[in-house]
Amino acid sequence: MALLSKKDSRLILDPLADNNPITIQVLGICSALAITAQLKASIVMALSVMVVLAVGNVVISLLRNVIPGKIRIIAQLIIVAALVIIVDQVLKAFAYELSKQLSVFIGLIITNCIIMGRFEAFALANKPWRSFLDGIGNAAGYGLILIIVGFFRELLGSGTLLGFKVLGDPIAKTGLYAFGYENNGFMLLSPMALIVIGIIIWVQRSRNKTLIEE
Amino acid sequence: MEHVELFFKSIFIDNMIFATFLGMCSYLAVSKKVTTAVGLGAAVIFVLTVTVPINWLLDQYLLKDGALVWLGPEYADYNLGFLSFILFIATIATMVQLVEIVVEKFSPSLYNSLGIFLPLIAVNCAILGGSLFMQSRDIPTLGLALNYGFSSGIGWFLAILAIAAIREKIRYSNVPAPLRGLGITFIITGLMAIGFMSFGGMLTGGDEKKPAQETSAATIKTEQIQKENTEETATVVSVSEVSTLTKQ
Image (cartoon, rainbow over all chains, first blue to last red; front, side, top):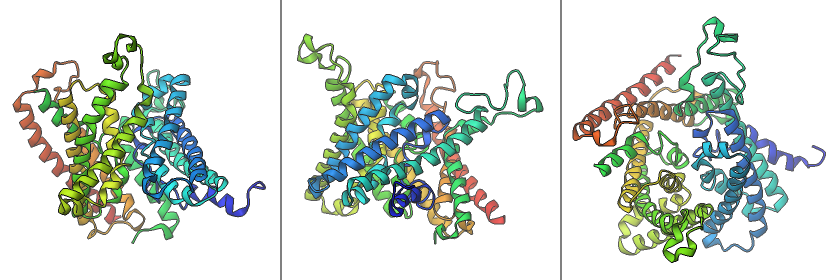
């Protein structure tokens, strides 16, 4: 991290663990949970949010002295909506199958609370470079949780990772399946995402007692 | 019949929170007390009922492939679909602002109870999600769109009311320290979502291909009974989950 001062690198590293947007700040759960049944979709979602949040943070930060306080929510929404349209069109052009699978959830990045939360809390009061780092850091913290959840749900639910059959073939009964292992189809259903996140919170807070509520 | 079917479908089977996880942020943040949960829930019903039909009109006469044909035959090839995000969110933000002004003027008491929640709603995923699902599911008429907005709002309201009641009770239970607050709420919501999944296939009789007309009043009645049962089970399940955790 020779490029970044100590203060700047904290902007990136803090949201990864002790100030994670999902498990600590409880932001941005809305559009995240339904798409984590597969690792690939989680990664694409994480990258899309990172692009939107980093660029959006810079734009808002540049405009922070121009936007009137009273209508800033609408101004912010329009900026995010424009960025999300770009991401959506790019996905439709280069990864059509995936964008069909993500359906409305790419559009819902607009109302992802992480984005509005970071705009309000950080970009409106800080310089563009720091806002950019903050955007990258928070989106990375969000993406990390998404990828962990996607990893476990795909591995336990369909026995694959990114589409590769890492546990063997369930029909030919090779690999683990030769010993009578079965996929847990339950992991593919959306409620399990909530329970997996609950467990992540449990693990994180048992390791760091200062995060425990009340 | 179509209306009744859509009504129950959007409340129970496609419940905003338990099936698609929309509006989770405010659902988790505002569900500590039943009274505030009721306030936010009412505001969500209201705004969804207003914005979904408006966005339906926009979609039908402006955004859809060939929607501009009413301007003249030379516009038949235009597809402004890529603009839908920005138009929908602009409509929602303006409507929320407008509703806030109107309510403040004509009903100060309602404004006082909804007041602080209205600005929150513009960025609630459930509202934009309602409009986007309305678009992607091709809801055919304005009446059905109105119905869809209203009933999804009710579904959201039911969900936040249930979790707020459970959270009020759970304060007296001995939850393991790291799970307290957020963690246990996630797990309870997961269990409730599993409970709500039992509604799936109820309207179609478990077979998507069967014609929708088969839904009779009897089915709906059973569904209501089932619903009560499942809600009870969901609560019982989450309570028993808590007690098992406590024993550890």
